[in-house]
Length: 114
Length: 110
Image (cartoon, rainbow over all chains, first blue to last red; front, side, top):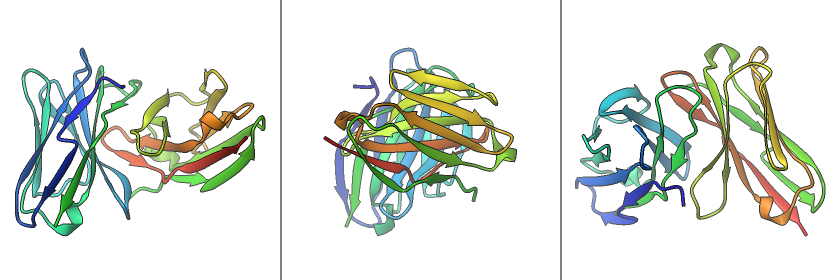
């Protein structure tokens, strides 16, 4: 158990809908990262927050947005869902923002869009 | 899109064998390199973060080296055990993005 929690574990929804995935980092960690793992693309970096501020952005679609709250938990919002958004979404956390910090992954949220 | 390559794609070794895999990346984009161990139906587990050319890190029977000038890192497992069976994933941190390789799947045969 990495200490990173993600809810829900599974989510099934229809195309066009909007969902929110939640992540609570390990106690004391200030950075949160979001990743997407789809069948055909492997693990892709979406976005990073550090202490409430966006720090790095990957190939995150405009339909997706994220934020980190004052209590350091983070939410990833996915809207106008398409079949291709079906994937496993991981959240990870690290102590700081520097390059030497290990990232600890949560168990993931499996999203199925029907 | 930046290419991080891992080889081999898969590997079967006998228990007790030592093995190694490679992660190659564009050296001009290097900021840090992460190695992860990823077991089926679990989430990636951090092994090492490597930041300096010539870095060598070790955790038990697993070790890693880094060459940032030529753009590669090696992961070594000494005396493989069945519990080492997993996918080993590397990720390049460019300073503002993370790029993952497709992993090396290791199966250790008892």
